[in-house]
View 1 (cartoon, rainbow, N blue to C red):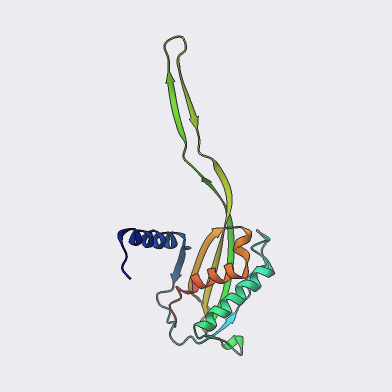
View 2: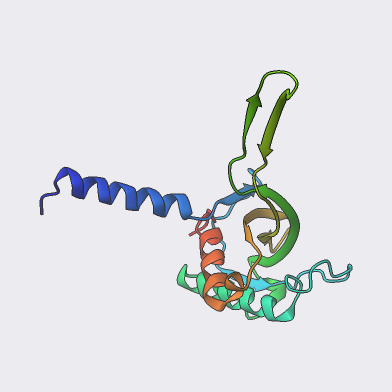
Length: 184
């Protein structure tokens, strides 16, 4: 199949839009950690002893979705749940946070009017529309089973809305994060 310049441009634009819309995933890891030899894992429930900052993000429903997504993704990568959680090669847990973000959603403009005396000088300014939205972050932690030290953390953020809480959306976010995991 031969692409003409119009077809090539269309493919280029589609590829650019897919990359631009992909979620950003951030990672930090312990440079001294040795990930080879990790085969089994255990789930560690997140610490919920503090005050609930966001009931949507701090829910047992969301925890179940995240836990199922992590288990399915790790299974695809060849990891198995440890028969005895105390003997797991690594532990997995998650955290969620949210914060209010203010952003402008357009371009402001202004113009001035100059007229002769006595009418003077006047300006009209129109500021860009501003909106406040909540941004949520999903963070996955990998903890070494022997040393109990955090060895890897991956996270992604997005706007908090109903579409981000479906099983499919949570599974996609977990997959995007675990794609950066350096083991297997």
